[in-house]
Length: 189
Image (cartoon, rainbow, N blue to C red; front, side, top):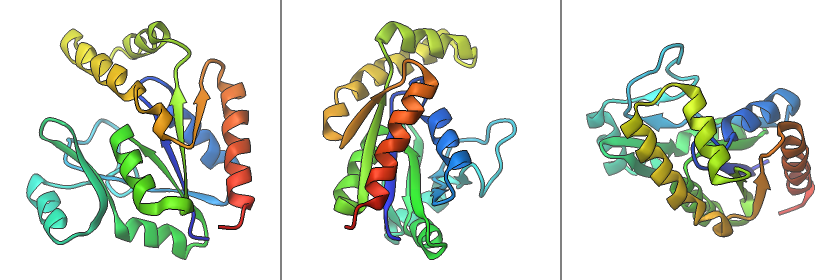
């Protein structure tokens, strides 16, 4: 099964929570582990949450065309998807699921075409998005403002995705998302 589910959203919209729910409830999906240059956060595991690479190693992999897509998501912080990661998941006869930023999602969809379903997770409103980000308590005011500005920018790209799921109430959003994934995986490409 060489199919991919691309889930994207601005920070705070709930994409990671929804992806985790899909992975808990569906055995036909496997998570794509992204590579990044940012520092590990507490509790994160290399090779499980991300492949944590040095700037030098990341740049070498770019030169050697090892990424299907990569982006400088924040200044000096690179994220990307290795071709080897797709091959790893597909060799397990599962569809690969991505939890990825908007620009990366657009590039992946362009490269994978009909093999991929791209879904944008939208917050019910800008106010709810800001409230969710503030309630995390992980951001300084400056970084929160940067993240909100980026989120507003990313919201403009939702029409470039195959579908939009509004995450107002988690279980309702999950049902909508799961139904779209189910239909896509059942279709012959």
